[in-house]
Every structure is written in structure tokens, then in C-alpha cells.
Length: 158
Image (cartoon, rainbow, N blue to C red; front, side):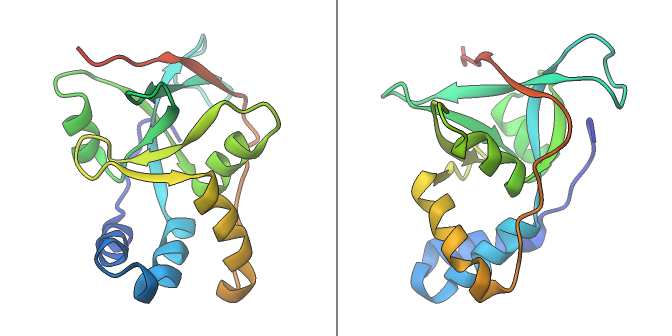
């Protein structure tokens, strides 16, 4: 769960196809999004690295002060975002993020996938669109995690 390696090559392919031809590749993209496991930078709280440890998810803001959770398809993408810095990560699925964003009072605008390169945004509109596509895809959303998740102060890039 903490500091795992993930391989999302099929999701990255689906994302590239979706960017090129959204209408043609929408279902395949959303299906791969639901299957993917992403790395999320965290600040570990006491009990570091233990299964019962809780943590704060790191968030970032854009120029309009909209808050996003940065998520990464692999370690290489994480290093593009924060070169030279050792960031702890937790591995989450789309359902975990969806739970965070759709709870009443959430102030986040969405996810940004690979903010060091792709900067692909999944916003509330996409999340609701996925809910509508679930029956078509024959899938359910896994999550949320049964571990305490909270949000850390914003990460600011120097």
C-alpha cells in the first residue's frame, strides 16, 4: 500500500488514445481508469509505514487556486513532478479519489494525472460521467479505502 511500484502502461495507452480521439476511445479510457492503481504523494503520520498508519494526501493548486490531487501512473512520472525529492506514496484506485471528491463539502476540483508531464485532469464532470457509464461498462467502482485519509496543506513547487 505504501511506496509500491505500479505499472499502468495499458492505462497510459488508453489515455493517449482518448486524448487523440475522445469520442472513439471514451469507453476504453474510462474502463482502464477504473482498473488502474495510482501513486498519490502523502505525508505519513506517526506509525510511519505500518498498515494502521494514517496519512495526509498532498494537494496542489493551479493559477486560479483550484485544488487538485496529483496522481501518478508510475515512479518515473512521480520523479518528473518532484525530482530529487523522496516522496512517500500510497496506492489508490479511482473509487478512493471519487469518494474524496464527491463527499459534501469537498473543496477539490479533481485529479491531475502525471502533473510533471501529461497534466490530464479528471474533474467532477468526468466523475459523474463515469457513474453514467458504469452500467454500459459492466463495472463497479472499487473503494473507498477503509483507512483514514485526510488532506495535507498544499504542495508548492519552488
